[in-house]
Each structure stands twice: as structure tokens, then as C-alpha cells.
Image 1 (cartoon, rainbow, N blue to C red):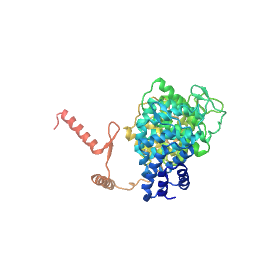
Image 2: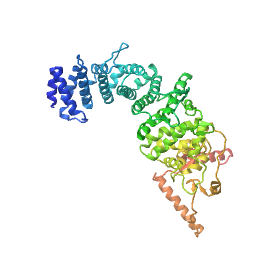
Image 3: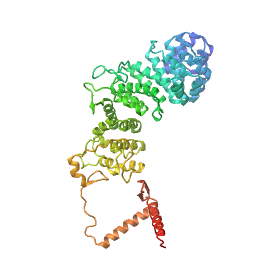
Image 4: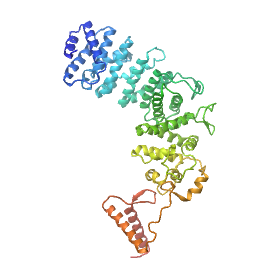
Length: 539
């Protein structure tokens, strides 16, 4: 149908005629996501007319059809102006049942109308900065939270709940002020934790332990999984800085309660492997936001038949995190986004809890037996992580190195033993530990256990490559002293030329263990010698 014809028909305002025209348009354009430029003005005009038409007293069927047309038009980012006005957004919010006005929320009785209006708002808020600003001013987040509080009392369909949560996620992702408003003024962490608990349908054994049905709980149904993931994303947005600040006992109890629910999320599966992976990914992301002292809930559940026990502690959750890490490593896709959250989480858990660190070390860095291959060669988890230590992405290589360093109790000698000095150099240089030593940390004094194979090969291991190297023939064998001196000076001259041309910069290690240009080291040594000579009265 021609857009001009539609515009004329909608301008006439006769409800039945408009309804028929819009139904035809919606059917034709239901899968349309690209639009012709030459019709842009007509689409804008139609959008203006539909918003005005929607303000009239219409039958629910006509409201739904009109909102479907608005949803289709809102896919065009160049035609959003009619929707991104205070009046236009207020009209859509009223039909979505979330219009906040003087602490009164007007309800739209028809659920299909609510659903279509929510879809329109999601499209518009996602695509328009002006709409994001106006929704913040209109305090739509208050209307959303008021309805979310009633989920336990009202029998709302899954689709309405899902798009409530999707809109809340978009608002908190795109507006810092809404994020802060939800977290602080509206007590959003408590509200969304309760909503997650309701969605998961959990029962509690202890204050921080969820009851499970047998050793293998049933998968979470598809609809509950979809809503749970939206809740996890909202919680991620509003807890983004919680791991970086101190929390009081009341907040700590709230975060531990949330942590116990997240542990349960790790322990259950969703409908299908891909959906389970996505569900666990959002769970891991949120766990990384919790204050460090609240991560102890991962180890809180008692050891029961079928549990993985280590040093008297239930390690089921930590084992699942480790399996999740290895799957992400094997996938090798978008390593920064997929790996850094779980690596950071495991690193901080290992730093904070001795049992977690020892369990992870036993799994990731077992006593060395293979000393013939480089640490980065092979398919063991250690090999995969060591390979990441020289990854092109700085964040990825830093996270991998930091994880292994913590498992080595931040001991340079132990770190080099498992990774090789060449792989370890980046982290050691950044920490000022090139000359060896150890970072300050609260670690036990237990010694690393060496295998007989390692003890036997240790004198022959090249610390740079981390393996036993084949003995190479001496290139200076058969040379006279003059020839050796000539070759040495030739090498010095080559380095000097490269240095002068700034192709390379010779570096040395300062007394503090940091890398520094070699000329600075020489200069400091000359000054020290000059000072020493002056003290002796020498010229």
C-alpha cells in the first residue's frame, strides 16, 4: 500500500477505515527492517498522525494495531522525531501502564496493548538519545519498578514481564542517572534479587544455600531463563561499582543473598547448551561485581553426597567456573569479552580464599612432569593460559598472567618455573619484579612440591623458555682469541647502530627491579663513581 494513501486515510480519522489500512500495512511490513529514503517524510508524517490517533478513545484491537504500526516505524532511526517528544513518550508510557504521574500509575487493562507499547518503547529508547533523556525526566523507571513489585501478586504473561525487564535493562545500560536512581532511591538491588528468586522458584536450606532436587536439578524452562537473564543484566548495570567500594553489614548480607542465588544459577542448566552457556555467562559477569568478601558464599554449602570436596570445602561452584573458563578458551572467540570476567573472578576468589587457590592450583598448575616442551605447547589448561600471556590484547594477557601469578602465591621464582621467564616478563616488568622477589600478599608458607622428573631435569632447564633445551654446538669452537674478539666487537657495533637509529633501545634492570634504558643505568653508575671519587679527594 502507498504511504501517501495511508497518510490521507489516517488523517480522515475514521476508526474502522484506519484499522483496516493499518492491518494491511502491518502485514506487508512485519519483516521490514530497511526503509526507502524517498519515503522518509511520509513515514514521519504517518508517525505524527499515529501518535495523535492513539490519544483518542479507541477499542483495544485498534490500539494494538496502531502500536504495531508505530513499532514498525520505530525501526527507522531517521523517523523517530515524532516519538521522541514528551507528549509522544507519555502516550506510549500510558499505554504500557508505566506512566508515572504524582505517584499514581494508570493501568491499561488490555495486556496486548501493554505488550505492544513496551516493544515500541524498547525500540525508541534503544535508538534515540533524546528519548533516553526524556524517559529519565518522566521517571518511567518508577512505573516499571512498581509493576515489577507486583509480579508475585499479579498473573502477568511472560511476554509483558520480559519486555518490562528488557526496557529496564536498556534504561540502566544507557543512562547513568537512571542506574543510580534504581540502585539507591528505588532499592533496585533488593527488588531485582527478589524478582530473580521468584523467577528461579528456589527454596532455601540455609540462609545462603539453595535447596536442589537431587544431584542433577532439572533445566530452567525457556521463559524463566529469558527473564532471569534480563534480571541478571539489570543487576550487572546497577552493581557495576559495588566491588570497588566498602559495604556495611546490611549491604553485605544482601550481596551474599544474591551471591547464593548466583551460585544456584551456576549449578543449574537452561534449555540447550547454547542457552546454558549464555545464562552462565551473565551469571559470571554479575559475580564479578560482588564485593570480594561476599564471594565466600560460593564455598558456603555443606559437602553432601555427590559434591566435589577439597580440604573439607564444597568446590562444586569453583569447579563449574573452571570448566566454564576452559570452554571459553577452547572456543577462542572474542577472548576479551568472554574470558576476562571469569579470569578476574577466579583470580580474586583465589586471592581471597586459600582453599579456592589451592584447589585451582591443583587443577591448573599440577606438579611439573613435562619439562621437554615449552610451557605454552600442549592442550593442558596451563598450556592454554600460558599461550594467552603473549596475546595481542593487553587485557587478555594481563588477566591470564595475573591468574597464574596468584596461583603461584605471587612468587616470581615459582611463576617463572611454570611459565618460563620469556612468557612471564610482561607481568614482572609491570610489577617491577624483573630482578625476582615476591609481591606482598597473605599467603601460607607451604612449599611447592616438585616431582622427581622435575628435580632431575632442573639443572638443565632454560629459565627463559621453561624447558630442557638440546645442547647446541659452540659457534666459537675452533676460533682464536683474536677472532672471538673481532666477532664480539662486530656484534657490539651492530647493536650500537640499531640503538642510534632507534630501532631498538637497550634496557637494564634498575636496583628497584624495573626496566630502564641502559644509558640511564650507565649514567647513574658514572655519577656514583664520581661521587665516590670526590669523597676520597681524587681529581
